[in-house]
Image (cartoon, rainbow, N blue to C red; front, side, top):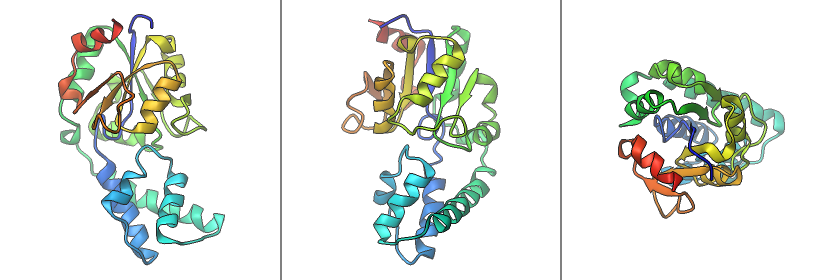
Length: 218
């Protein structure tokens, strides 16, 4: 592994927790279709694209729909979700995220976002964090979903660094697998049971600093 020159961050569950808004929007859709959607069900949607999430939801409810109808429902869910995120404020940034990003910037470590979300720009603007990212690779710029490493490889490319020089921060198992498939180091955020393949697992970015990052070079 090379020298660490860049950090690539997933958005949901790493910088901010928008999972609750996704859950509310998906649950409303399920209720409208006549079945319940629990928080446990919602775990299956972590890091998964919008259409794939809808397919899981419909499978849980035992509902079969045409592609046209699926498209309409996916749009409806997104509009519902966007009404929540447009109300977001900087105080929703997860503990330690902003200070760690600023520390990286001060140490000249390059920073990019690698998220499946098509609403990433809106969320970063609401949180007033856009200026801390040199590159933003989101759902509008990739065709393959994690665990395919496309989103992170494009991030490395946009920063003009080698994959081996990157550390990815992820809260989803598919994201950890994407980082490793891209030949990058990975810091898991959440449960060691779920994210055990990551190089290290922490509770959140409040447990991270520059020195800890550099210890991953060894």
